[in-house]
Structures are given as structure tokens and as C-alpha cells.
Length: 255
Image (tube, rainbow, N blue to C red):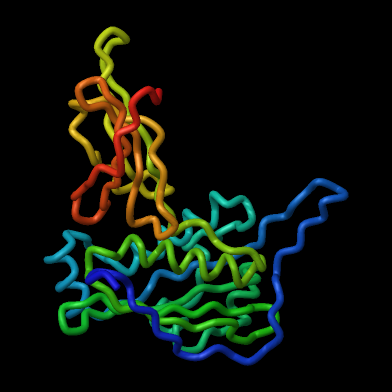
């Protein structure tokens, strides 16, 4: 397991029968997005100041909540409600939601949680609530290095998406692609990677050689791609985390 990989702890899950709150009527071809409230993750002042110093973010709890909210919105299956309508403070809502308050603003599902700075690590707890049934659906916690805060938001989005739709989430994914720039006669192509929402974009190659057809390996930690060395095609294997690469093989005559 890599050093910075997120550690997942299961707090507890109420032993209820699995079900999805969203049902799509494909015969009619329409969908009403589920009204959902994403309460900002609560954070104590000490933790807030620590993360502000490390990450230069004023409120990392709100930042993570915004990622979750944006992910669920762009899926088209959810309608995150305006936070100005919330009647309960985040720190209170995380412990015991007043379901009548959330019913009042038409929320059918509610996400709450909190963020803590623990021994130099980021610890995030979140809970998913069924507002109509007035019960908890899921509770999970994550501990990781602070710089993984965006990925925590994506993983929470995946967990919520799967619990509410019955389908696997896709938010904690990355896109590998070939970035092009320059005029047609002097085109520069570089291998690049970014999160599915466009964040954390970075180049993996310098652009000195032509690169083509990048592909993830099954673990998404390595990338194979075709490049040319002295006009001869070669397939390379690149480690995304370390930047090290090796030649898989030379393939004369391959284009």
C-alpha cells in the first residue's frame, strides 16, 4: 500500500435492507433529481487553523463539502439544496439532525460530518441520513495526509452515489490524455493526467518526443504509452507517483 493512500475505517452501518432512493422511469424518459442537503463538514478552531496553515484553505470542511456537492450535482441525479435555506448548524446536524427542519426545506437525503487534525493527519467523518425515514443510512471515516483532501471529497461522493443509486460511483477517478499545443507544423504533445473534475492537472512528460495512446494499468498507478526514440516506436511503462519509467519493448515497423 502506498504511503499516502487513504485508510478507510468503518464506523457503523445500520443493518437495514439495501435500497436506492433514486428510481429512474426509463419508459417515460424523465428523471426528477433527488433533493439532497450537503451540510458543511464541521471543524473545531484548532483544526481549522492547522489546515489553514498547511493547505492555505480558510475552511477545509467547507471545501470538501463543496466537492461532494458539485460531484453529485453534475451527475444529474441529485439536486443539492441552497445552504442559505439550512435551519440547523453543521456541528449540531452531524450529531443528531432535526429531521423536521430538513423535511421543511424538502430535503430527502442529508450528508453531515466533521473534520479533525489528528497527529498531523486529516481525519474526516461523514454520515448519510434518510430524511423521510428519519434514520442513518451510512457512517464512514477516513484518515489520510492533508494533501489528499480533494480525494476524500471524491470518495465520499462515490459512497453516497452508490448508496443512493445502487450503482458504483465514478468521482474518484483520473483521466490520462495527450495534451497538444503549438502550430500544426511544430506540434508539441505531452502526456498529462487530471482528476475527473479537471483539478490537479499535471504533465507527465516534457514533450521532447511524440507520445500516443496512453492507457492505465488495472490498478491505475501505472500508464503504458507509445513514444518514439530516434524515430523508432517504443512502448513505455510509467509510474504516475514516482515518475520513473521503463521500456517495455521496441517494436520496429509499428506505427
